[in-house]
Length: 464
Ligand code: UD1
Ligand code: CA
Image 1 (cartoon, rainbow, N blue to C red):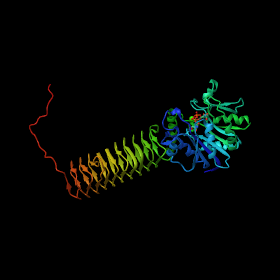
Image 2 (image 1 turned 90 degrees about the vertical axis):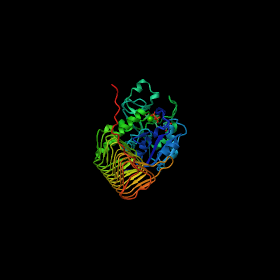
Image 3 (image 1 turned 135 degrees about the vertical axis):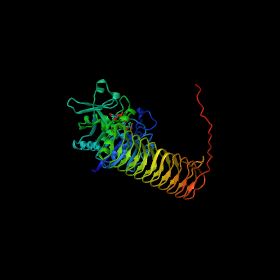
């Protein structure tokens, strides 16, 4: 990795994000599970710059907390959102010493790649320009600043939509909002911006016209919309996510994962998937998910914050949720299974339809195949948990534990009233209500209601 030791990166994140119409600060809106700002910082970090300064406003504390207060970031404060130029000025005190270039990014362009950032710095240096800026031709240029060029094609200025007349609005080429400045130019000129415009703000892109006035070069780096889409509202948020999702899915496909009907599948940023895993249509892999080699998921399985070893199968319509939910090699769950936090399944465990497991350990080879609730249970190896078994773990105030040792057979429709322990090799008869510890081996039953027969009884019939 090439380090940019004399590069300062500034990320603007103090805007109000009014067009999102949200209580959540715009830069914290997630794109594939990460706040938008985290995507931008991730690309920035890959350049190994001298420093990264993030400009935040009234939501400073919330933003810092959401990002886990990364150690390599300095936080600058913009008291009021007076525009992108004012935001950059607010960052000056956070710049590292002996800086040659300043890369300015917006917290609302989550698709930006480190390759694009590098090419901006390189273009700026090569032409010894006052600044290099990314320009693009998006599907819909509305909301962006338009690029106005001179007759000879050189960039003259950027005009914000609010200040543009019909002729300028018709320009398809826009400012992507990502710039590399010569540090001396930016430091000297940032205080010269004026708020004499439709929004009464200090516009950073006005530095383009200022540079031209001083006969300094301005270079445009053309980028695809897929790299620089700005997110101002929730329509753009969804578009950004779709673009990034396509990129991420292709990365996994190239790493040996089969993904059926990829346009129906969601794979968030914190997911890792092993080779030869097959993901069927409609699956959602959310949060921090680890999937081993040779697994098979779905169709329509939802996994959040879970860990799957190799060769695990998650059959259709199952919902698996962590944290601390782990499936060892060869485990199989579903269809229609639900694993909640702390479900730990050993090797080759089977959890079948309409079975819910919460905060429970199931030892190697144990099976709970139908209609069961296992909560706060510790179950050994090689057990068979019959259909309709319920660990009655909750007394209305406290949770209690059920322990089932190895090689136990629990008959169907058994209630285990916790706290209770079932000894090794025990068999429990169907329909039992277990209120006391069960000794190892032998057969344990609770009293059954006598079975009676009425030979003369007739089923009622509807009158014709
Ligand atoms: C900006 C550019 C526009 C460009 C577009 C690209 C300006 C004046 N316009 O417009 O030319 O086409 O980005 O996406 O720069 N921010 C602050 N403090 C402020 C105002 C904004 O920190 O006072 C931050 C915001 O949090 C955001 C970024 O700067 O991350 C851009 O602000 P935004 O209001 O979204 O600018 P646009 O109208 O999109
Ligand atoms: Ca924007």
